[in-house]
Image (cartoon, rainbow, N blue to C red; front, side, top):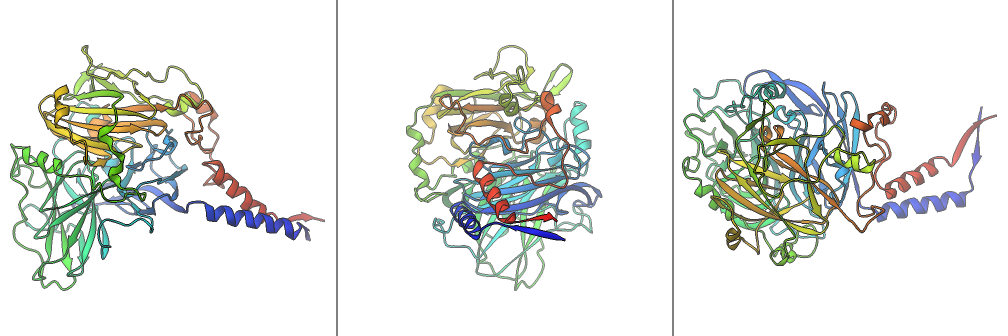
Length: 596
């Protein structure tokens, strides 16, 4: 029979007070379990292997509020390694949780790993996806919403509802087949269609759309205004988004409130996210089309690369019928699309995640400390392999992640010598990264010398999109920069034969991925990293510590212990969370069983 040793009540009371007081002082926690697995689905009428999250395609929404601590336990049920990336989430001073190969070892099959990060000082619409092995082409993505805290007003009346729409090009081959094609030197070719929320097109045309395809229907109430968040989660195709007979009042772009302007349609490029305010002010004689179609292509040839969903009023009297609303007619003239992109401005009078206005940053008056002109070219052959480059460098991911190599002083993993302008010699494959200056202000000029649209993304930061134009960038191009209300976002498009300039404040210590969002370009090496170190911080207090559950690989793989399945979500993160756990354990151990 067990007896119990009694710990004095006064000790219990003190521990309880410490726990309650500590918990109330901390920012809230949000916990999610994501199981990543294969399912069979037929979004375009052809059965294929799809990557689901918690059995769903797309995956569930991660819905949190500014400053929340987010704990996400990811279970890998795929037959290959996995990393989940949280696109657009800042990971302030915490690149350990970024979910890309430069900072994290992959999660082996049948393992799980717990991500732990804070959505510090940000709001907006983002998404998550698997970052390895071309897996995003098979799915695995889902929305992320970061809401304003209650004390921070949003710059518009509270919408009646919040709707998430994920659009993207889609192939009926799975990611392993597409990966093999790229590895063999082939291009991906034209997609087989466009999905809206993981579903194929409504049968608006009996010739183009076969019978039996499931389509998305979004039900709305007449007269109400909704916030509609749209993300292009596809591989590489720029898509024009529009809702028949409805205006799209742009309100937010990847975490920044924008000047509110009406659009009949908006081009959304690979990796980009927007919020629109849409008022259901039409009559209900029939349903309405929601359309996402390929941009700046031959519309006849690419007609099948069109996603169609249905906007259904609750009092609708019939189905949508007739032709789709037309896209912009500028196949051979990209000026319209670029002018539209230039019209997107930052709302400098609105509060963002903090009480002060977004525009108080005054980025236009900050001295630039480093400049990188990053030029991409059409794919080239290097060492017999088809590769993509930036400045003539095709990035090679190291076996030991960069951040882990720094932590354990593993040498010869990478070089801090990424060129600040295109190299003059032949292209080469290197693990070469940018040596960023802590609290420096970096100017990145993306020069697109390819024949297709490219988009670029920087992890860990928003950057200010200050300029874009056709032709070659030069020093004189700075005279065209918007130095007041260029939108701050995480992903910027670069038109073929054109350039885009962005500015970023390097105030977050870590190793941050800079990449093409076009998945084929990224997979073939069009990326690098920016390493940001605080030289005055020998104890590394300006960066969160390495998590206790870090995975080891490469030169450090012998340090990896077998996973303890009984303790699936290990204690990790910063010291405050550890203290919280210790106090909790202390209370549970008040009565200590022992055997007589």
